[in-house]
Image 1 (spheres, rainbow, N blue to C red):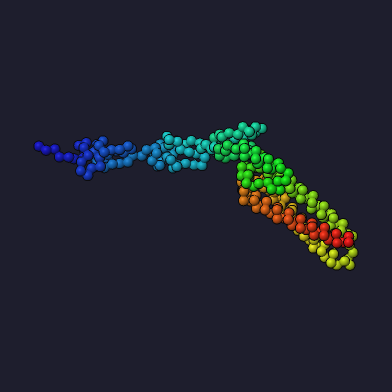
Image 2: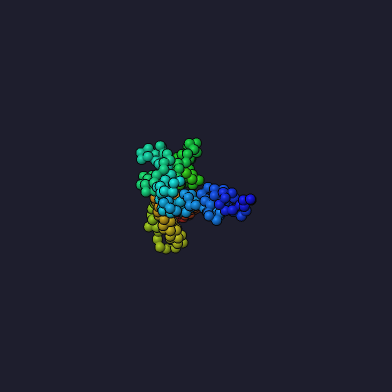
Length: 262
């Protein structure tokens, strides 16, 4: 008598995918018709049975899914700068709910980046040099990333010093112009025309100066959005261009006043 293979004999034969435990893999079972059935399990990406989540399935904001398919609060890496002791900056992980408070006292999202002491020293020396005030390098990307970093403040102070010096020059030139205009008779048409054109130019330059100062003020109140390398570079180029206009206008004024004296 010959025993023929059949579904249920415990041996995988013919077209059977499985038979009993034969041919059955992890998270599978064998049906009565000897076909494989995939079983739900934690890690299949589908929320099944008593699972709270599975991978990204079932996840809400501020949560992650554990290897046991249960909710856990998401942890965010921040660079923590202890108030009063920013030199002791170090990376910590916090919950999403605590993020706002940490950002409020100077922490930044992401792990702390180890700074290069030699690079910082070079930046400090460059910015401190008096002749370089108006050329504070916008390439100092570390300083431009966060207004609370020391380098950012130094660069902005350099721009402030430049604007302050420029404001004094503007006021001096404006006062001299006013005195010259008061001493002129209306009959000197050419001279009056020249001075009026110069006066109009200075008025426009005054408007540009105040606009530029407001831009600087806004830049000091924000971080990455307005203080990117590109924005700061465009701002620096504009300052240089307008300074050239100042100098040209001032030289024209001196020429006119010297002509008047002769």
